[in-house]
Length: 324
Image: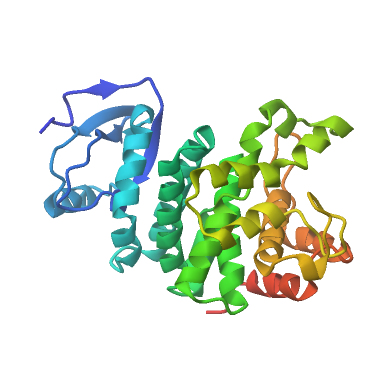
């Protein structure tokens, strides 16, 4: 084992990880660091066994966070995915911590997926992630409330995708969809709903000024492009395409890409549309601050005929914290 005094680094990118994300009696295939006096100190080298005694020693020294080098992000992400099912079921871990681990795992995966959207392996990984997330959300309302607390509201395409998936699953469960299989199908589509944006330049996606008509025409194509990308892999359920294709359709026919109306819009599309707009409005952008939750909801209610009224009312009710 490498001792804590043997290697120090002050440069490079390090990301904090929950101590509880490192499972006892495993051999993580990445280096683990601790922070000491502003420096990152190598605590445990790759492939060194991590035991329960290791964990207890860290806890006795009030260490609840470790660090992983940015170069090992993908390796850590794969490790986390392999262990996520056990983590979400581990009731010895605080629910707020489990929510944070679920969110971090989803965030890392989506960042990788958006860089390589056509890789079938990444699509399969996203389905497995949704399955673990569904299991966590089904443990009760507190799971969603804790997810809401750990969500990042600094907008990126991949954090937005994770947020929309979490909000979609929570709303679906709130309105009575409780079949794990159905939630997985819906959650997969919600997580991948913006994958078509990988075919649009970042300059257009992040443009602070109003889009030109040509640029907006490109934006309007991303739902269909997302379906095309995923059909090439032929890995997701047919029903998972509804959130991807329909999340910009509106009840009154004012949406895109097809301009269809209420009866033609699948329920999965209606649920994902509400989650998508709410998260977009309540996230900070480079060119505008976030809108608070209730003004955002008020704006959505004021857009007469845009959203399914019953689902929107249920969504607003869902966001009200439960009294202890």
